[in-house]
Length: 240
Image (cartoon, rainbow, N blue to C red):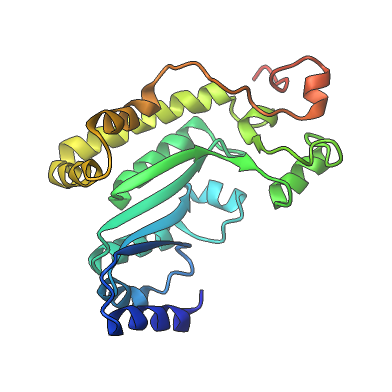
């Protein structure tokens, strides 16, 4: 957002010949692309992008103010300029999102050729526009639920149920892992070798198996007070 600040920090690292490697997060629509060569020269090896979704429909619903074209350009340019690891943060279980949309986000991650990625369920926190939207819809009571945070698929009856979101995520991860192993074996081997510097083999296997594990939940989902008072563990959804 502040390009002069980027230049000052990077030039300071270069001038002082500091040897540490570093990374940062950024929005694709505000990425100072022309600063990337300088950042790489200053030992920036990791960039994490808030991709969020692989369809323009969901991006617009989340009011991200970014396009899929901007995302593709930012990731492509980062890799071209020498960023070693490009990570993508994705959200699933968003309002108006279908199973097809979720799988398209995974396919989008494949097209972006990201090195690492995460697909987390959308959560709503107090003070966000989505929280206020749910207050106005009567899903959240601002006076009684103020201290909580919710996974949207657990409380919004218009969103895909959590079980459906989980199944779509498993299918999507299978698609992504197959792509990484079959079409990018060298890059995948290098990435796993990098992980092995900081993690044990068992931890790496646990990480890779995590998306497919059928381990029972250890924590019940946070629910609004009105759902708890009715003795429900999920909102009542229409039959369709």
